Image (cartoon, rainbow, N blue to C red; front, side, top):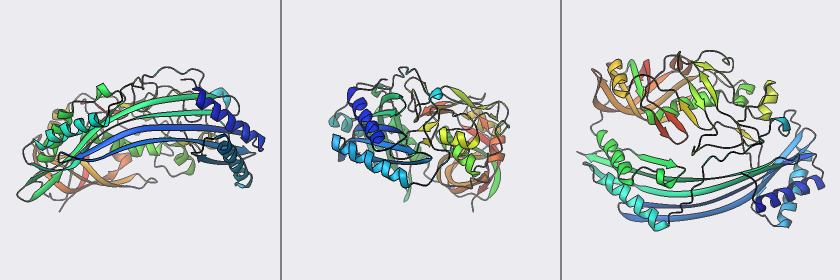
Length: 447
């Protein structure tokens, strides 16, 4: 979307001050956020929070030196002080031969409407009612005796970005969230679980009763958890944990990590890392997507692409700095620095579904572990060695037999990804659409 008058004026003034004080080039951003959140616990109102924040940031370049800072003072005098301070910092900063603005030829020229702004602004009483209904539905499930609380919220964010060589763009987006974390209890044993959802449009949130009921049933199903003997076997990861399995991969294709040599995938570009047929697509232009954007944090053009195609790693995630370090072209994956250099991040991700639903994955596993929660993962980014504490259910004869806890799962991610089988029970959760995953022959630690 184009600049609004306030954004354009503030950033143009900030860039003009930077040039006046001696910056050779610069970029500037403005961030604004408004939100309302409500928390309830055991039918009592716990708190209401309203936030409004607005700030500007400047990054200035002098030769191969850069510095950046942000400020919440948007007065004319405040903008001038920020520019003077940042340019002075740049003069004394160490040289970075890879810093600098993105090449103008890589910049976005079109800003499609991504349908990520809703007009709904539910009041605090409306949010309180939703949270109460959600928690009451959880508490109505048998064996649910307590709750850590339920919460409902909305927020709208606005970000604008401009450069001294003429780029200007802005984007706004809304988000609405609802969730609850109930506790089940039986014979002195206690178990906790959760369910939450976040959507761009208020009307797209699932019913509060449904969220609460699912959370309650999950917590109650964990009662009677047992410990198991240490073994090896197939492990199925519930679809709500798919992001935890793919997260290390996304970190490993981050161009900054590759350039530093601290990625277990640093020599795997163009190589088959996942099983044949596995595919992961990114689409920054997805309508209503929670991570959708019309341009990246340096103003680069963005597009849909396969990050994994038939198991093969097809790209690194690159901002301008990482691209220069690797002698490659930027890929539109810069995140807005807003007070620092740009970062690197992906947008909306979608896994290609497999052929089997969850029941079929369990049937194929026969005997193994179905993981529904994960705790304290440990990862060696150089080697891909990975371990995590988990809870879930033991599977016998293709069906869940009993809940388990105090279990660990471990393996090397290169080996795990090569054997990963995707189910077809796709679910969109946040900015990821993914199914359950099956990985055979993992180390399962118990007694």
